[in-house]
Image (cartoon, rainbow, N blue to C red):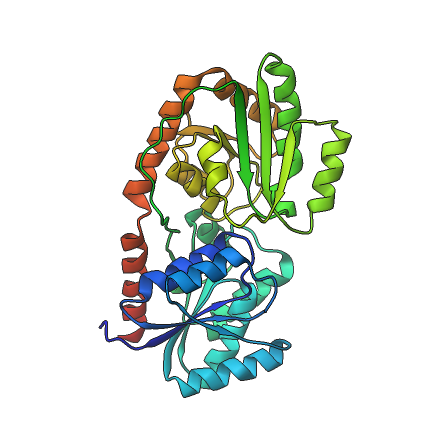
Length: 357
């Protein structure tokens, strides 16, 4: 059953983050199979890179406005007027709205969980949605799904569809340089635990005292001031904060090592991007990071908050150029083999067909 009917992909906002990027990749991936309506709840933030992608891929973008109930009325009317068959929500607020749409229109609705942890209120909103209103819940990570099932989610209404990668790059062998650049990309939130990353870099500076090391952090969010204070408190002078650049590609290309310090993750989109550019990775064991990073093969995996071990692993890669290259190439091969757009598309089509059969 792959008739070209109408579906909605519902996204909270065009903010910086993996969920936002994956929602756009999903709209692109399903565009040749269904008539996709990409509906965004909030007008702000609205990143230019996402708007450019929408224009480039000719995605049918609809912007809602007003408070939650006003947006709900707009969405309900749109669903009825356009004979929508399936609605796919990406984040908690989208799940809540999808539950209301399911209740008031009777269409099939799919929720989404993009992390292995949700705060108390978000968890119970999502649990209630799955139990009583939503037809299915898609997790982007196996670790998170298993945790949520243990806490009462229905295994029969849950499945894992991993993220995909687009703009696939050829493998890249960087030339050795005088400066080693470490890169992190992601929202400035509690879950990303940038304090651990900064402590690790502070220790790294004392281990590799004869090396020129630069640490670049790209993103934005409510923890920006905290990060700036931590940098000052640790007296770090080799840190660059880049706030929401139009493109991050150049930073991946010029980096030497990718670092993720999260205490909670889903399927880390930024690690997939790092491997796409043949970067070795040092990561915490958060979410499905270990599904991506093979320890001592494509990078190093350390315990969350263990900044001493993180510093030691970073130092090993700083000191050994050949290991950086070998790890990065292993990661690149893994991404090409496992996270293609075709696999992503086919998994969603199979789920949609199952729900409508």
